[in-house]
Length: 258
Image (cartoon, rainbow, N blue to C red; front, side, top):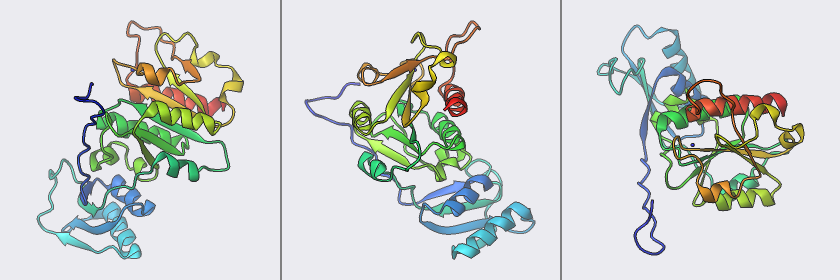
């Protein structure tokens, strides 16, 4: 779906960059609209900017973000920059306590990832989660990538809107959420309960969907803290789906029936 050296040893987290470059018109537009980052400067290619780039310049000007033409900005830099680069600070990240304090009055919809380390998968899951109206994404401090510019691009800018919380221990976080009345669902091949046969009563109220890494699945300690396990039935020769694909199937089915 490691082992530390020495008692109580923990892997040190890499320092988060104080500034990063966002590329791609969709990502930049959402970063400007969401205003959850510190926004430093928008650079756009010289001449022939087109409607999308002009829209970004107008957005930046309305927000008081400096922008300028950059003759050195060419297609191919940092991949396909699509004619613009936004220099910005990192996205804010919450603690579990912060997340609980910001809990909405409506049904709470959360997504938690256990060992999903690929930035492309993280971005794709964030895009789906934001698309179904999830309120936040929960990541672990270890075995999860930083919410970087690459993740934002993979999410088509969705992560610019979706709050992210970091927790040191996912099993303990799920236990804390249960104390807040949040039911937890895990996705596991061979769990015995088909997604399409889940009782309607399971899907009422506050819930968190927990997805594990491809291959390893959910860790035993995390699995033991779940209230329910479901699986996506397949009829082909390949039993499991890519984690981002599975997230889309699960989240949209939960939304349809919830």
